Length: 80
Image (cartoon, rainbow, N blue to C red; front, side, top):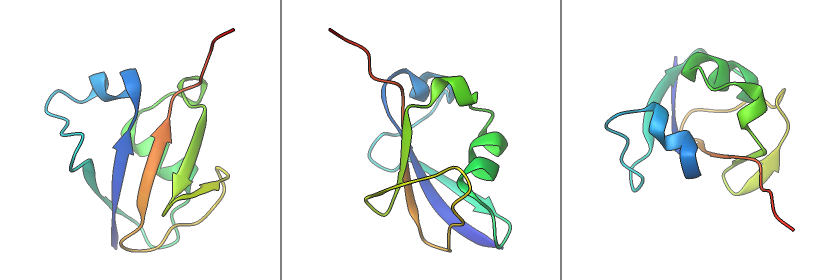
């Protein structure tokens, strides 16, 4: 088992009643879990995600994360 910190942007935070934006969510994951696995575990629909970073680098859904990784999930950005 491994632990990661997941930080959520914008309205994604509303899904978690006691979300602390400074601390994020401390999530226990299986070794070898991917970004997609973590997002699914949290129940965040893929359509609500613009992009994801792990330790400051933009990553793909299939990227595997390690213990201690800080993941930031950003909602899609719209504008004109």
